[in-house]
Length: 462
Image (cartoon, rainbow, N blue to C red; front, top):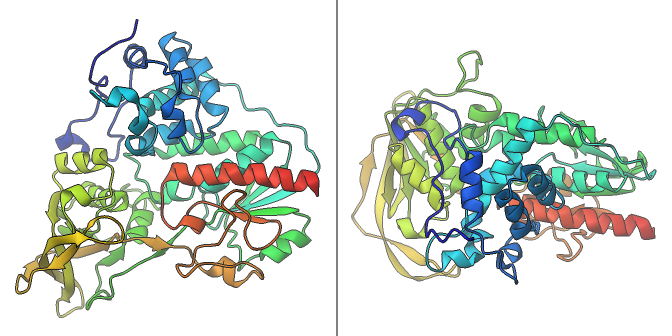
């Protein structure tokens, strides 16, 4: 019998005043009993609207039915038939805008906690299963994947399952892309990412790190080495700045740099000698998930005051509601309808404050959100010693400028056929942030999945 509770089973969490001082995972996960209780809220709809909201088409009602029947391994098998990174997706996907956003239980209450159940199944499997993934016999064809982020990992995994000899070329010294350098430990433990990557290695995927394609090797050279197709999943790691006075002061970071130093270079651990400013007051400019991550990291690194400075209102913020809620609980101060106009420094060139101006919302702009308009004469100073710019990123131009035949749009994103993910050069495919600009993990995974299907068709017909 269906559980008709209007609310999800609550996810256990660390208390806000405890977790804002450590980098342990905020949410501690469902117990078996909690998972079964939540799973029984699913109505197993005939038309399965939740599946249409998932970029990788997880068979959601099917896996939830197995959770309700306490067949947790069976549920994991259903999920991984289409999703190679379930422990990751269960934690960082914006389910409220995707699968859960289409759940009929959300009409008169809260939707089924699909993400929480996906996370539970993955964690259960990782804790109870020691069997390694099997390598599929080689079909003799080699494919190169550039970038070990969610898009590249997904593409590589799907191709390996079809017998392709896949090599991932990763610029950093560690595989994982944004999963390891961008998303903090308290949202996505790196041991989980490593587990997913080790699973790919067991399937026969080779990962070569410290390989900056466009510098160490070119795409042309990869083809000369015997690779018959190439997937570009190099992400969007080039940070944006506002272009205001004072951005060159010491203490101004891009969110990418700040998060990379904190997460990948482990600045939060005493045994790592990672240079990072020990801030007292921090302003994070932006309103997306990256801004929330940077602000919450700054708080955990010891800042007394951390401000989110965003030119629109709270309702217009693009960050997940859960991340905004967690940030507020942890003591982050939100200064909405506020925009920086200048960063001021002291006599040594270090940040001492940020001049801001108040904003008000006018008519909707091209994005559909109300346009922020400056209030004349409303300038004020915010005393901070660190400013973190989290206003977006774009793809690094290195690959497209060193590869003949690759075309990009005016934002520097590679142009692809949306049905096949093939670029303007035959045999070269692309997906994720390299194509869309900064977006979500699951959308990047969906692109990697589609590209793997197209590469298989291309090489089978070649």
